[in-house]
Length: 267
Image (cartoon, rainbow, N blue to C red; front, side, top):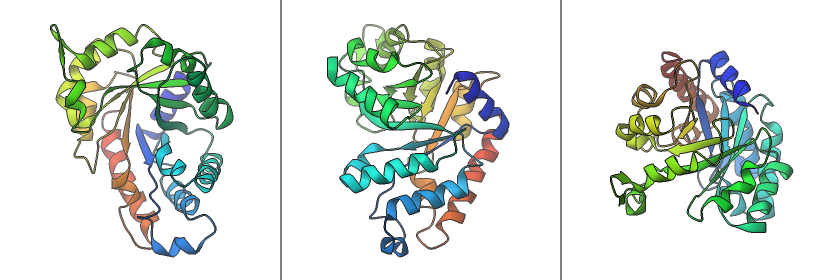
């Protein structure tokens, strides 16, 4: 998907909502466990009830690969079910050099046909280049994450800057705002404004809204790009598990609609 197509969907839907499909079979409603593919059936109902409010879905690969072949099959069926106009992100956090990186890129871009994949930058540019070689595909590089452990390395000082700032500043030269995004956590909303100055034109994928306590309003005020938004704001557990009953689809719909309503004020 091109940048123009993504921006168009954001304006059509007045939304920059990304829904993380972190589907945990231990948390889905029990009545689905009697179906042939409980994970896919759960995802299908979530998609049916939320697709008009979001512009992206982000399956977290760990939740599928942990189930072995059944999980990979559920992932493949889920991807086929997602409407074509919706951006898809493989939340895989891959990052390795040489032929290994090429195989990871081939897996998610050629076999599964994701629009984007998350990658870890620790091994440097040659671990990222295989992903950036694909036309109209996106590499989403971990910049400043929303977990408590982000302080261990990302917030180390390197001269006058934090390490995460140097990562974003340097890597922004590897790709362009048309194929490179950054993960920037919503729980660090106070830092998003300075990150936007470092990467003024790149899209940010912002996790941490909802269950982790991030604020949609703060994120959009701090890091939005005028006319384009430049944001994909992710919510996972807050939407997926809004209800544990048979009404979980309707509950997810209400929560997604609430988030979209807030976003619409800034788009």
